[in-house]
Length: 438
Picture 1 (cartoon, rainbow, N blue to C red):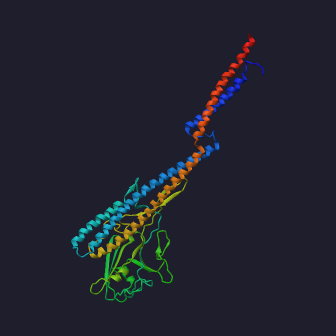
Picture 2: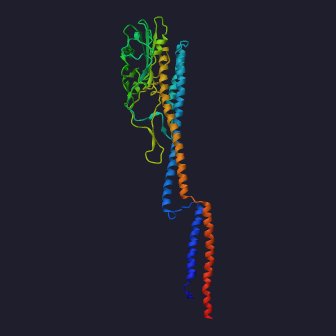
Picture 3: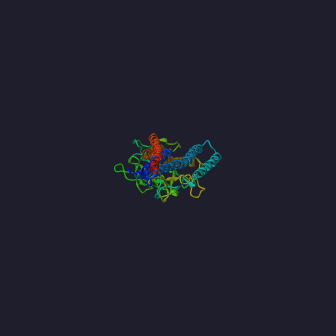
């Protein structure tokens, strides 16, 4: 090998190796300091891209989980308002039963009415509950619905009962005669749009069920009965879907004449007494068994809440919350002043059924809210699990094995020091040429 001084190739090669060792040491130092084996796209281009997509998904899942928890808090707020309304309805029924008892004087019933009025006003206050400035149970967050009618269903009468069946010929579900006589008295009470109406008369030989639908000679509802041989619909619901009895067995249905809240039948009560004034309990048990099967609602557009609970577009839960105002529950009229009354024994009996129907509406709404809360709880748990699993996968791709990286760091550090020593040695090699110049 020629002895040259202008170009020290040993030093050049050693310097190149020194720079490589320095770069490797710097990368090892970065990995150890950051705890990640991929700190940029240059470390692993495909791994970096996959990892970044996973990080986006993790953040999306975590935000969706936070959404579900916020949604759960919203539903709990609505649940609290409805629960309070249910407690008030319990107290209202207690007061109505008290007022129906003739141990009370007219003054006593007026006093009870004052309590009833305050309770009804509190139900309206409950309906104004808010979450983050949004009203929840005032009907402003309902699903898209068509205007529907009240349906009161009776499945305690015989399966062959029709709207034209005479009262004196009625049988119960078991086929036993109700033993209503033509000399018996009937009394029918209605609660519609907050107004209590009562009519009474003698049964007679040709009084049928349809005749009971008239108050003061005016039709207040329509009566329909399913055939024993071929069950037919008893109406349509708020989604314009045909409505049958729960088990599609024959039943007698009482429908309001028109759709909407102002035409709803809040309470319907039938009482039969004999000529001496004794209550016919067996007959009343079957005749007064018209229970609310469908609530009346006004037509509305889609105002339901959308809970976005996924990491992709349109992964959401649609939630409609019904109207829980006193008017919608059938306890108050549209003018605000008419409301269920307990100032007479007859009004109190009508109020009992009206309050019972209001309870059915409130409990149905509470069931819907509770089901959504349970679903959101499962959704949150699922999102948490998904986020954990994606994080575990992303960690495998991107996180550094610290034991391995420390080993590499130590190796590169030793190699760097060795290269530095060899560069110093290579720089000394040219000094041998000086001996030739002496």
